[in-house]
Image 1 (cartoon, one colour):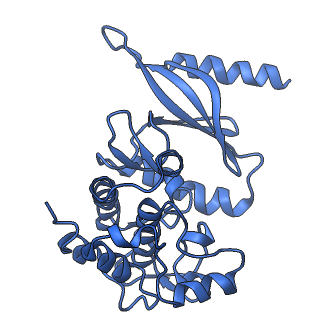
Image 2 (cartoon, one colour):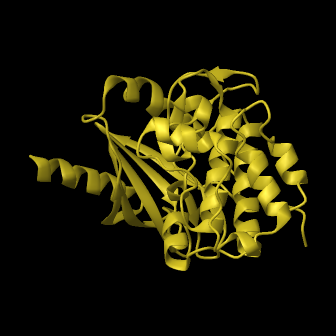
Length: 283
């Protein structure tokens, strides 16, 4: 019965030009697989390497199906930006949703930093600028990501940076609207989320951007995340930068980090101020 259902999926997807390959990764209610796509009607036919996200609605809980999944699909249909992963097509077959996505040939930022170690400031600036440009576009379109982390920052074959995974994202949010749901990974979460207080999504996203920037610079996490109490204590304390990194760190970059990772969200730097900062505009 399973094989029969699988062959139905394979047959329908083949009609759309998709040939599914090996599994790349697995989420709570989804899998991501390698895929080649030949766009129907394209002359001459060109095989494109893409990723396909497969969501199984049978294994997903009610709140995911009624709240998170419809939001994600609406956002994927809406967004189109050079620094956001492109969605080519969304196909629903019975209890499965297939999302055809742009392929990021060089994997995610976490794997990149693990391989390379601490990145040079110029490389950090290029990656951070492209990432920030993608997030700025989302915020301008009333979308907050709410799960920004190195694993959701992808690197294409041409080194372009792409924001991915809108599973926790929220849309139609004005700059002063408050969110209440705790989303994402604790290690990247802003203090106001960890404290369980209503938060402004764009400000929480900016905090997560600061954690990502720190990881690129230091090749380590900025805060211990063994438990929430320790994490909040570290976030409140003066930012620790490893002694091996500190001597080579420019004052402009250190200043930017401190302004992004401000425990008090009212004093945290805005996206506009990030783009105007001295470090971002350094030649």
